[in-house]
Every structure is written in C-alpha cells, then in structure tokens.
Length: 253
Length: 76
Image 1: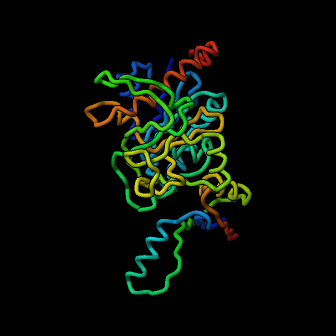
Image 2: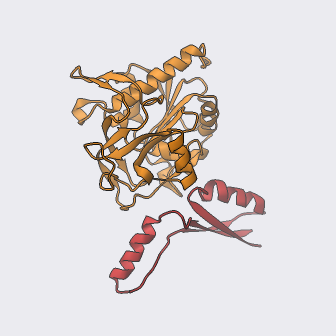
Image 3: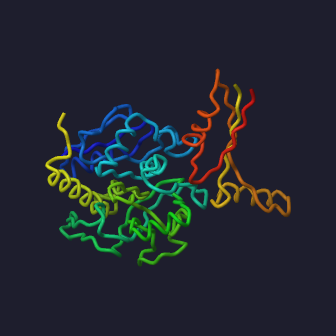
C-alpha cells in the first residue's frame, strides 16, 4: 500500500504527517508536489495542514486549482480514501469534495490549544479502529469516545446551510464534534463557533474526510496525546482493506 | 477590458469580521451602528476579455458560492 502526502506551497504539517505514517505506522509514504499530475498510484491520499498559497483569497481557494487536485478529485470519485487535516480540510471544501465551508473563527482569534472531540459515528473508514498506546493500553473506537487533539487555526468555523447540515446528520457524515472534557456539547467548548460544533465530516460516499484537529500532532505521549493514532489506524486499515478487496485499486507505476 | 468584482459574505452567513468592526465603531463613539459586513473588492484588467469566462472565474475562484455572493461590473 502506498500513501501520498500532498505538498502545496505553504503546507507546514506535511512532515508531521509523513513522520507519523512512516515511523509510527510503518507505511510506504511519499511526498507529492502539488504540480504532479497524478496520484493514481497511491491507495491513500493525505492533504496536510498549513497555509497553502498564504491563505490568499480564501483558505484553500487557490490550492484547489493546483494540478494535482484534478487527480485527487478523480481518485476520490473512484472511492479512494482522502483525508484532509486543517488546511487540507479547507482545500477539500473549496474543491467541493466536501460540503460546506470553513470561515473565520467566531472569536476572530487564531486558536492554538488541545481540544476534546467526540466520535459521533464509529462506523466510518476514519473512526472505527483499535490501537495500542505506548503504555500498552488500548484505545478502542466507539461512538461517544473522546479524542484529545490539538487545533491550530484561524478559519475553522464550519458553516453550511440548513439543508446541508440536515443531510450531514441524516447520513451520519459528522465524524467529530467539539465537546468539553466530559463529552458535553457546549458553546464554551466550541473553539471556533462552528455549526453544531462540527470538527470533522465525511462526504456522502464516506471516503473523503476533513477535520480541523491535527491527529498527526497527537500520536506520541511526548506531545501530550496519542489519540490521533486512532484516526490513522482507522484510515490505514480501511485503505488496506480496499486495496485487497479490489485486488489492488492501485496501478503500480 | 476593465472589470470590478465585489464579493460579500452571504446574508445568511455570520460575518465575524463585520461584527468586530461594528463593535469597534461603537467603541469609537458612533452610536447606533446596526451592522457592518466586510467583503472584498477586486479590480481586474484583462486584454480582450470574455464576460462569460469572468463570471465562471467569479464563481469558481474569486468567490465561494457556499458562503459568498459576488457582483461583477464590466467597464468596456
């Protein structure tokens, strides 16, 4: 299985994603420059965080038209797994691979802190796995489980019209919501004012995932949390399964 | 061709910048400011120019129709 970490000018979480995938999860991972024409040869595509194109115009608005994104959209359409973190989430929304948009935080402040998010649906390709932490304890996905991960963004305020929000809820596309440390949805625990405390969603087909928290910064006890491992474990297992069952959706180049 | 594009947050979308500016205006002593909305204004110069194409670009790049409306004015 091969994993791509897409690099845009201004990506700055690319190395963190690469590190986690390679060193914590022993994956065959490669950087892919945004000018590359194809990501067809990969089984999992990660769009990392950062400030692609300086966030000019709108976050992700220009990156969305990078040459590689045409291929990312085509592979997403074919059912390949795509995960966007933070700026990656913004790019996926701008590319219309995910519904809605991410606007300026309600407070106008750039927020940089650890938050709690609650798994709203443990049936997704990105939120179902079990993983061992460094102390040997198991972290087992279940709906309602809290994951503590850092956020660092100025535009993480998820917004969508009523019909879209209804659709997201009906199809169980909301994967993560911000909660307090006890798992309660409160305005105080919502760090950016996002609609219905949404922190992460999938597309309708369930193969494209965007989230504002940074799981790649929560995979090491030294960094204060290993909860992000659950996300990576899930997406890697899902991608492996897809690769196997389709006899390899990947063409080796 | 010269064109200008105004991009504004949709009425239905909260504009945190507008709210902050409104409050600041109050702090500066202007009472009764009901609402401020902050958008973008772009000036474009293009040789030749195709108004249809400009609209397409307004929709795809210069604005995000999920959260914004645009107005395109073309001066010949």
